[in-house]
Image (cartoon, rainbow, N blue to C red; front, side):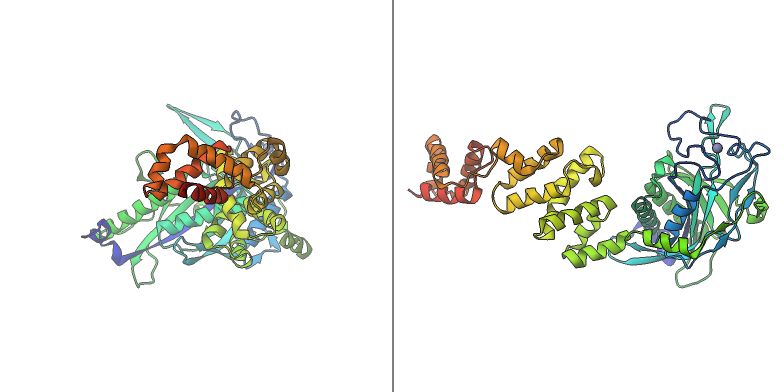
Length: 488
Ligand SMILES: [Zn+2]
């Protein structure tokens, strides 16, 4: 059967995708003034001052925290160079939410040049994406459309951004989505951005072109703007690749348009013909000194760089003999990875045991509560203790699971709770025999069924004894005693 893709002649073509991302840094104040940077859900025009609204006669002052966070990201991108001197430039354009009439950005001398990010695709393949450049800049305000009126909110003016541009290295919508997933993970891991696309903290424009497989030329590309979730980036790129193939197959040429993605109808529409950089009349920002980075400061930043997610994932596989699947989940978020390692070091048993408890039960708890592992009341030494209690058969597996919630609610030590609530596993032979005898006496019909040959019913008997003991009976011994009693 022909697939739709083959119908379109899609297999003849390959797609060339580059992404331009804007990352909102989570500094306390804005990039050039002391106003609060985060205005999420705050009334319009409440976090503003003469500097970020561009009143005459004011001067911008660079926020050092912005440079620190951007440099941390550049280091994580393995950039070729963090420039000892980089410059701000004015990007001139007129728009109502840009009160100065220009945006302070960087242009010919950006903060960092050249870098790479490795994407680990779900099929195990590693895709290397080049980073062309990385620079810092200020954000513009927001225009809100309300019926026929256009309302301006300047709160976002001067919020610090990093702009990062990839090379044309992505070959499918899936790879583009994976780039954003890995970038989001990295930004949160480094603690430099909340990277929530729905809140505009991570924004993405995609450049898309196609060519016949086996050829090397780069054809005119289109740019897709205003996509605000990873799923929408995937859909928009897929739609654009199909459109370009249809156009080329019908003998038309691709024009360098800027396209707008409409989320509600899942369609692309033409916004305008693309601007060229000359339209922005860039020139050096005269009100700011260059960003100067000393070797000593850069060395200090390098020593602050944490082990990155992919490196940590490899180490987990090697050092703790974990399967890739476990290592991937445990390194999705940094505080979970920390939690795992701390638990393992206190527990001293098999790391895979800790991984199982974390992935099956603790992760569910974290998701239900909507918190990070670091915010759990149940600390790693608590979890290690619970697993040890189960290992030593002091408590049953089901008591262990119930203990997780009890410790999380109270923050108390597991062995204290076991002691106080009498949760210790019942392994004492006489007690178990008494329980088994009670169950057998109360269920003569089931005993007949067992003796009639349906021995699998023993599981039901074990369940009855567990219920009588409130989950505390040693299941293995119970089963052995049952077999002995039922034989008669
Ligand atoms: Zn301000």
